[in-house]
Length: 581
Image 1 (cartoon, rainbow, N blue to C red):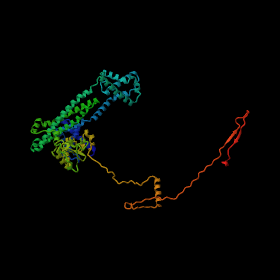
Image 2 (cartoon, helix red, strand yellow):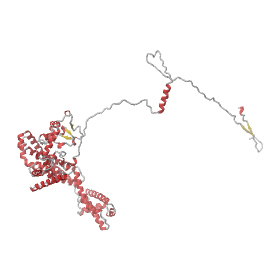
Image 3 (tube, rainbow, N blue to C red):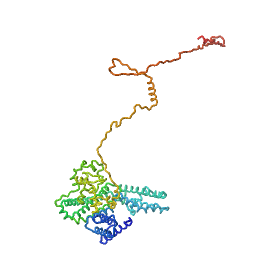
Image 4 (cartoon, rainbow, N blue to C red):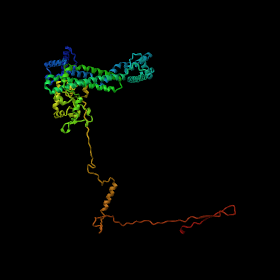
């Protein structure tokens, strides 16, 4: 069958189921009807073959089965499925909700923003009207007061004029549209800060709610209510578990009790517990946040409303098993909490020596032990498979089995050993059990085995897989020399040193080796010596010599002692001749 034709057939089936239920006074959403169709087809007891197209008789049978299950008012399994569908359709993460809230706020402010950015005011009256629109936009975007309250408008106008006088509107109008939008957002934040400061000083803050005080009262009240509901659900789950354990050991009680319905009631309260635990951390995170108080106020109202609407889905198991019946069944039994069950086998741990092929993880050997994604929401896989669906919490301290990149916990060491012998067998048993009870697919997070039933709240987590970071003691030792040394001691990089050695070796060819031995040393050791014999050589140098010339001696006579006025001198040269020296 082509995909488009198959989709058309499925839509017709869902529409017919909705009409049939509406005729009996029960309004069923398309999502719930689609989920029920999948659940009925997956149940092998209904006899549907998914490998062949549906005949007309198959469609009629499918519609009839789905309608009968949807109209069963005393079926805990149906309540669990309704709870899952409602939670999946209404729950979003905090980030997604706030993102959607901001998107809606932006869409509501879009028309006011366009009136301001597209304005081409010129006259005085038009500029005054534009300024009033800016004040209204600031109040609407900040959410601190109504733009129809005169006192709030006056206070916001005064704060805006202190940073953006009306005289600057001309400059504002010359900006581009993006610059105008950016400046309006900046003005909103500044005006909001001024008004909050004035409120803290007691000089303004008209119409501003005390959001910290509101959250301080609302968060504890809501968390206390959720804690109370969570405790009630856990106590009910503990009691159901104790009764089912008793029935497992007493075949006669099993016939009288109808454990199948009690197990469905157990699945119902466990699913309710899981949803409350999902909601509760959000409130814990809210109590630590003192920013974006308006977003948190809206979010807390939505989550509180979501919690309130989960309560009606708990009605069926209370009708089937009223308090009086439960008290009679609990006679002589000790109701154990999940914590008590974990403490009973806290010292029973898996011995690694007993397993050669399987990998086991422990808190002291795994850094991110608490962050591992445990299969079946942490319930014991062996107990669930062997007791036809009994939910007992697993104890990670016993050891977490890693099998095909998935992680499993067990409530006892014996359960861990038996499961490890043949994991595929028990996994198949759990899968078949989930086909019969469709609510187990979401309760035990079996979405990867039934990919067509992955809820929206788990779509983003399908590909996420946290791998264990194992840690162990280790030591290393490095030998001084792992490999034999390869250093060539005779290597020389200097060319002149190589030449010097070559000349030395060449000279040795012409040398003779002599040895001398004496009577005193011939008994001690052999001695040898090598010398270079002296060679005849001579040098010649010049002799020392010198030359000398006569020293000039010239005298002038008659320079003094004369009688006349005129002096006449006689020059006498007394220098000796060269050959006389």
